[in-house]
Length: 317
Picture (tube, one colour):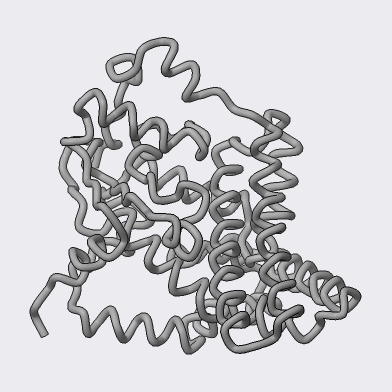
């Protein structure tokens, strides 16, 4: 199949608008990474200072969402958007965003750019994430239960341990479902950095919460919100020729941004239309597209509940 059509930004935005939308701030990119880790630290502090079931549940959900946030910021680094200096962009994207959650920036970038090149086409490496939809509510419920009970985590992370004993030739694979990278060196980096995190938790007097919050969030809430993100982005969107219809934007409310969709990841249609816009410009791009009438060609949902109703609208058993 041919590559998907591209939209010429000059036909959509004025020169001043495009100049502003494409302007990047290295300081803002670094702030987003600091914000992700600061939010994780604040959630851990909450449960350390007020250890009760409610604070623990909130901490697990917030940390799981910020773990997804780290993956989203790795995605930003894959597009060169965290820092003007390439070396800084690569180091921060790899060691502070990708490796802590088991990903690898270079491997992710390689397949993700293919996703942009062939969005919703047979060559799209992420097509399997959207092709089965819509599904039944029962099917989604079974998947969500597997996520929240750790079954998805075990399925995705066991290959990390197996890869320690694989030959080096098998060292370049990525799970498209979860952004998790396998391979001996990638696994060693993931385990080594998480060992360092445990030491930092322990030195802070919160060693137990490394397992009870950080690991538990990675094993439960992270797989669920990753699944929801994958569904929201492309499920039940068009496979036709109009690039405005290949991805979905979901207008997340503050609670959804806190617990499901951090760092403007919900503006996915705008990202696919103009993939090198920094993530913090996507909301403004959506506003301009709406003002100019282009939003009528786009797939937009007013919230994640509406999106999930569409994705689970298949009434077949």
